[in-house]
Length: 116
Length: 115
Image 1 (cartoon, chains in turn purple, brown):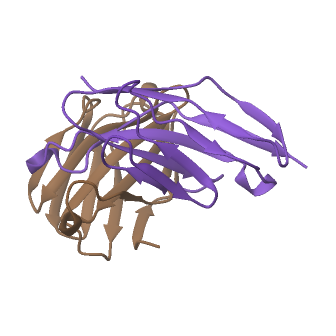
Image 2 (cartoon, rainbow over the protein chains, first blue to last red):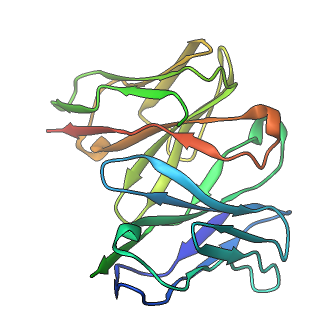
């Protein structure tokens, strides 16, 4: 079945440091890929998405590129802020349509802490 | 923000008791989902619904049942709670009209502790 693997955490950075969180996936067909962010005490929010190979999703300074050849969707940000401290989840949708619609498979999550 | 309300927000219950969690949406979305979040596992799908009275199992459905008698409400029931069901439960909804790439919108979760 489909699966998503994220780099082990937690990740601790100083403000303005460069961030990379690795994500690789296993899926049949042509999945869509997502990054979600969860702030303390809240539900998950969509951060960015990519729907086909070589697409780049971006939002709030974060970027991720859908790499079919390496089955990866790594999250990057050039300069993190304290407010970026959260849990980040990589996810995929199998895109099978019909009653498979919308179901997501999530990675285990990566805790990011940014210090001033 | 998508109008999703989960209740209760926190619940402590004893092993063997039944528990029902409620998800209420004001978006009139067709698709609704229940996930559980556990450390090291991310989010795992319990059950989902693709319409009123239309539901199906996810990857961790054992010990759970669901019902959807109205578009806006999706109930998750633990018939006889066990300690392994201690978790944070999230409801999510999906915008069917935008196709299968549409993101999920999540509620703020219910923290359930089974003692």
